[in-house]
Amino acid sequence: MTGAGVGSAQLTGALAARKDAIVRAWLARTLETYPEGTARFLDKERDPFRNPVGQGLKEALPALFDELLGAMDPGRLAPLLDGIVRIRAVQDFSPSQAVAFVFLLKQVIRHELRRPPHPALSPSGGEDEGEGAMDLGALDGRIDEMALLAFDLFMRCREQMFTIKADEARRRTSLLERMQERS
Image (cartoon, rainbow, N blue to C red; front, side, top):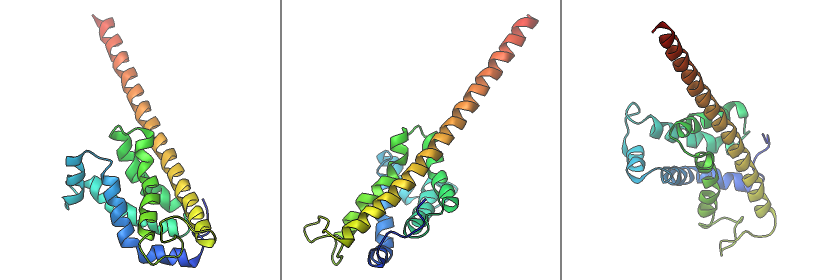
C-alpha cells in the first residue's frame, strides 16, 4: 500500500474539512447498491443488534476515509474492508458489485470538491492542469489500491464459503454411503 498521503496538503486539508459530507454521501451511495427497502432499513435502524450491516458501514466508512488520507496501513484497512465485503459475499453480490462501494468514493469526492472553493477542480467541474489534478490522480490510485484489497478479501471469503459447502457435501455423501451400507 502507498504510505504517503494523497498529495498536496491543500487537497488533504480540503478532503479532511469535508469528511462528514463525503462520508455521508459515500454511505448514501453505498446503500443505493441494496434493494430500496433494505437500503432504507440499513440507513434508519439505529439498533446495532437489529442492523449489524448498517452499523458496520457507518463505523467502517469514516475509518476507511481516514486511512485514505493517511497511511493506508493494510493492517488497519483489511479488517475494515473485511467487515463489509464478508457480508456482501454472503449476500451473493457479484465480485464487482461487492467492491463497487470503494469506487463510489471517487465520484463522491469529485462531486464534493466541485462545490466552491477548491482549486483542484475548475469552476466548470473539470480538472485543472497542474498540481490539483495530479493530486486527484494520486488519490484515485489510493482508492484503486483499497478496492484491490477489498477484492482480495472478497475472494478469500468466497473461497471459504465454497470450501465449507464442498466439505458439507462430502460429509452428506459419506453419511448416505454409510447408511446405504447398513441397509
